[in-house]
Every structure is written in structure tokens, then in C-alpha cells.
Length: 457
Image 1 (cartoon, helix red, strand yellow):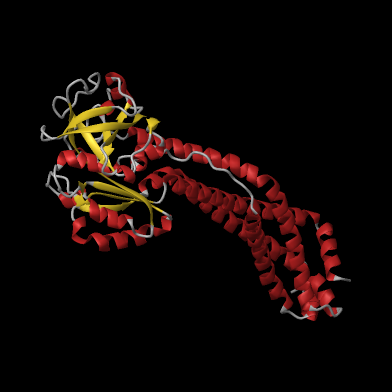
Image 2 (tube, rainbow, N blue to C red; image 1 turned 30 degrees about the horizontal axis):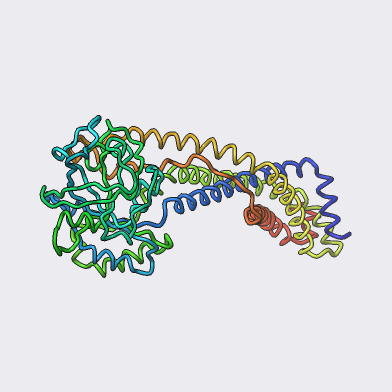
């Protein structure tokens, strides 16, 4: 009789054993497939998070290197521009700041946080490209009218003002105002290039400069440099942002940038912007590791149970093997029959599991992720900045632990079944089944047919 037909008859005749084997395979396939699907879904979500944040490298002050030095370091804009011309860079911007004064008919918003920079004083932040400011990129700030400041505006005297400051003074895009530099002597006429909205209330101080957020002014680096260093002084900047073409280029860019800048980077550090991604993907990594652990534990336990079942089944069929061998049946066909029986059961289990596992995984994975994301969000909300004028280290507060704004932990995943996922599960189940079959079958077939029939072993 054809061994394929014998395999079918054997499965039908031994319904109880077939059902137990099928159930074991079903559990294995469901758990392995669930783990594969969750890992694939979290990997997609992590990739989307990286793309949303962007491949970014930030040049900023190295607080550890500064030690007790109170003055922030500066770097020549020409050095930053040379770094920005590297092939890995898609766009870049740099900034500097100094106190600027509003005098005459134009005044600051006074309801809310009191300014700490003297009468009429507020931070004037000069930027090369305002669209690359973190708050604009994240959508926290909204440009209500006008246009962003760009590299083409570098040496023009143009500014962006907040809508509350514009409303208080009746200003709109295209109007001109006079700004005075920190020396309280140098003045310049600046054109309002745009009006933006900062959603933070006036009662909440701007976290970096501790002034009323309504009074923040962003302008061109050349325009503000003319107020800070009148004459032909070189423009010195305090930070820069480089938006790269590909996230994989971050390390290569940093190495090249360090070679270009050399000692000019003293007091600075080049930070790969992965803190936001880590904050967003923390819950994803947690459920991925949990799913992987559960997958391995259930898979190993299921494989052990399956091996015991197959081993018992093979021992119970010794006389059957002995009869077939004495009738001239080839050993490889007996092993092939057993492997075929396992393959059929495994295929049916994987097929059935594929029908409902994605929906089950979506529900279970979403529930796990929701709890992890909620816990991560609570931790973010509970973080409090150090008191004004303190580093926080003496109070056990690490400033580096400050959460990244607009980088909420991801709380949703989408589970989809891809052919590659099904192939992985099918291959895993089949491998487990064949391994569990081959070892006991090979042990029996090493014996002679006569020994099996006369002694039962």
C-alpha cells in the first residue's frame, strides 16, 4: 500500500491521538505566530516613530565638560556651515541668542510671568531656519501668518513674534519695529516676517529663558548678530540642528563633523536625537520582550509535550513497523509516513491558527501596550524640573531625565499577517514535528523486524 495512503488511514484510525497532537501543534503555532506578529507590529511602529522624529543630530553645550564655567560656549557659524555641507545633511540650522529691548510705543506682554531681563528686555533668538526649531517641527507652535525665516533671510532684519505680543501692539506681518541690542545703544529696524502661536499660557515661564512665552522673539542670525556684535565681528552661535537624509548616517556624520570642527567643539557635544524615539518606543520594547519570552516558553514546552506524544506513538507502533519491514517495506518510507502524518497535522494547525491569531494578537497586544503606555505616561507626567537656579543634582533630580516634549509613548499597534510570518511559523512547527518524529523513529528502525515481532522491542 502506498505510504501516503497509509498515513491518511493512520490519522483517521487514531483520532484521539491525532486530536491531541493537533491541539498541541495549535497551541505552539498560535503562540509562535502571536510572538512573530507582535514583534513585526512593534518593529513597524518603531520605524514610524523614527521617521516621525527624523534623523537628527543636535550640537549643544556639553554640561559635564563645562563644569563650573557659567558662560555658554560659542562656535563660529562658518564652522557649522561647513558641517552642514556634508553629504549626509539634508537641512540644517543654527541659533544664537542675546537680550533685545523693545522701547517706545512697542511693549512686552505684562500679564503673566514677569520678565527677568529688565524693563523691555526679552530673549532674541537668532535662527538660520525657523522651520527646524523643535516646537515648529513637532507642531507645538503654529505659524499663523507670514513665512518662516530661511537661510535666504540670513542677513536681512526679519523676526517672528508671538500672537499675544502682536495683538498687544497691533502688529501684523510686514510691519516694522525697532529693537535695541543688549548694549542698550545699538538699534535696528526689523520687519515682522510672521506671527506664530505658542499654546503655553502667559503664567507658565518659557522653560529655557524663564520669561513670558508671549514675549519670545525669533529673528535672523545676521540681524540679531548686528545688534550683539556691531561691525564686522564673526557670528558666533550656541547650538545647531542637522537634519540628515538617513538615520543610518548619524554616526558617519558625527565622525566627519568632529574632524571638521576639531578644537572648535570644545565645550560642545554632538547628540544623536534618539531620546525622543526611546521615550516613544519604550512600551513597544516592553511588550515585544514579553511576547518573545512567552513565545519561547510555550514553544519549548509544547515541543517537549509533542516529542513525548510522538515518542509514545512510535513505540506503540513497533509491531506495525515490524510487519511492514518483514514485508519488504523500505525504512525511509516508514519514516516518511510518520513525517507526513506530522506534516499534515502541523499544516492544519497552522492554517487554523492563522485564521484567528491576528485578531487575538491585536486585542491582546493592544491591551498590553495600553497598560505599558499609560504607565510610561504617568512617569513622564510625574517628572518635575529642578527649582529655578538649581541643577537639581543635590535634590536627586537628573536634568538628563527630563522627558522630551511632543514625544508621547506609542499606545497603538496594527497587527497584520504577512506571508513571511506564516512561513516562519510553518517552518518552526514543521521543524519541531520532524525533529520529534525522527529521533524515536530512527531508534526503532535500527532494530531488526524479527526482534520487533518476537520480543516486542
